[in-house]
Length: 260
Image 1 (spheres, rainbow, N blue to C red):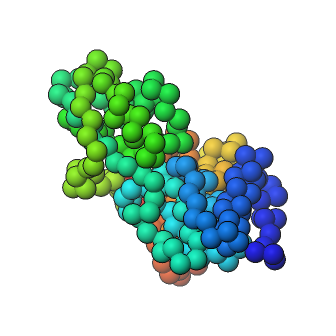
Image 2: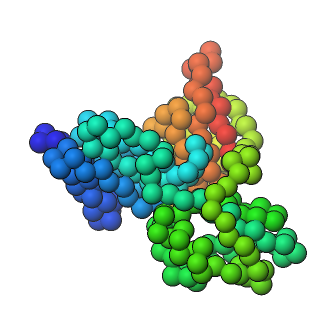
Image 3: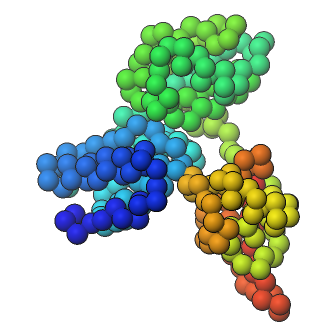
C-alpha cells in the first residue's frame, strides 16, 4: 500500500477522485484492521475506477458483484485476509415484484416507485421489468424497506417477495457488427459500430458524448482494446468483442456487439 499512487486520476472529476480515495480506504481497512467492506451499487464508470484503484495497489482480494453474472450495476467488495471473496458475502437481496400485467410497467416505473419510498439510487442495483413481474436487486436495508412499504407501481397493486427465479432474468439481446477499421482509435471503432461517418464520430467524442468502460472519452486518439464496452449518446451501447488480424491493406478486422 505504501507505494501505491492514484496519480492516474489526475484528470478525473472531483467525484471520481473522492470515490477512489474511498476505495483506497477500504483496502487499508482490509489490510490494517482485517475489516471487509462494501460500497453501494456502482455505475459502470465507478466500477472501472474501482478496478483501476485495486490494480494500482496490487490488491487482489476484491470482487465486483451485483446479484447475477451479467449485472451492470455492481458493488465493490474489499475482503480482509482469511475472508474468501464470495457472492454470498455481499449485502444484496433480490426481490420479485408481482403485478397483474393489465398496465405496462417499465424499468422507469419501478425505479420511480422506489424513489417514492425515499430509497436512495445507489442502494438499487439492476431492475428487470417483465410482463407480470419485475426482479430488483437492492442493498439488504433498502430491500427491507421496499418489502414493508411498496404496495403500488403506477396504478398497479403489487406483491413483493424475497428471492428470484434466475431463469426469469432475461439475457441481453444484441446484434453483431463486423468490419474493418484503419486503427483501434475511438473515432474509427465508433464510426463502424454506430454506422456513422468518421466526422460525426469525431464530433461526438470531442463533445464528451462517448464513454469507454463508463468513463468519458474526449480524445479521438483514445485506443480501444478487445473486451471494452463503449457507448455514444443517441447511438446505444456496444462491446468490442474481438480484434482479428489485418487485411492486405493493413486494416484491422473487428467484431462488435450492439446491445438491444
